[in-house]
Image 1: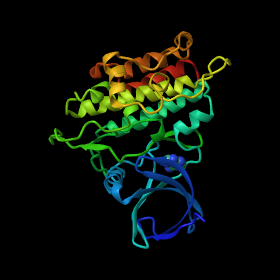
Image 2 (image 1 turned 30 degrees about the vertical axis):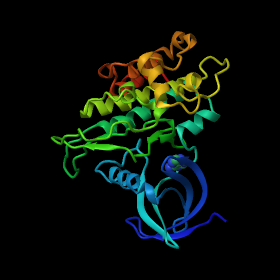
Image 3 (image 1 turned 135 degrees about the horizontal axis):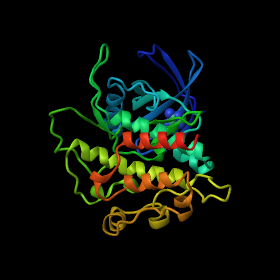
Length: 316
Ligand code: ADE
C-alpha cells in the first residue's frame, strides 16, 4: 500500500524507485527505504514537502560540491522534483544504511571501547572533511569550507561496519574566501545542541565561529557515545539525549539558555568514566569540545588525531 512507483532520469540513469517503509522522520520530512527496481538496489529517499524546498536545494547544493564523495559523508545519488496528481514533493536520493542513525543505534546498543573509538574517529574525519578547505590539485576542483549547523546523533548515519557518515545538510553553509557572511541567520539548528553563543545570540560572523559551533555539538554527541560505552562489564545507563536529564524532552530556548549559558551546565560526566584509563581521554576531549569559550574548543582534525593515537596506545 505504501508502494509509490516513480521514474527518475538522472545522472544515475533511470532510477525506478519504490518507497518501501519510513526509516526516520526529521524536521524536513521523512526518510524512506526504497528499492531501485532497475538495479535491485536499496536506496534512501528523503521526501521534502513543498514548503521545505529551500532545505532540499541547500542540501543538494552541498552534496554536489567538489570532493564530497568521501567515506565519512553520506553518499549522494540524485535529487528530483516529484509530482504526483498535482502534489509536489522534493526527493533527495542517497545511499541507504540499514543501521540508520547513531541516535537509533545508541538507543538499542551499548558500545565496546573499540567501537566507541571507531565511531568517534570516523565522525571526526567526516566533520574534518566538511570543515576543510581543499585547494585544487591536478583534476580536482576547489572545495570550500562547509559548516553543518545541525550536527547531532540523528544526523550521523552508521554503515554496517559502524563507519560513521555525516548527513542532513539542509542548514549547512558554504564559506567562500573573501565573501562576508554577516547576513546569515545564526540561531538555527536543534535547540538541544545549540552552543552557548548561539543560545545567547552572541556569535561572531566569521567562518571559524561557525565551525566552533559545530564542534560544541560534536562534544554533546561524544558524550552520548561515551554514556553508552560498556567499559567494565557493569551496567550502562539507558540512552538519554544530551540534557534530557536536566531539561527533559522539549526544552524552550529560555530554559536551555539559563542552563547552558548562565549556569554553564553540561551533561554529567561520571567519575567512573573519568577514572577508566581508556575513557579518560574521551572525557577530556568532551570537556574541550563543549567549552564555553568557543576559541578554546578543539578542531575536528585535533579530535581525529587524539583518538587515533589513543587507539594505538590501547592497541585497539
Ligand atoms: N536515516 C536517515 N538517513 C538514512 C539513510 N541514508 N539510511 C538509513 N537510515 C537513514
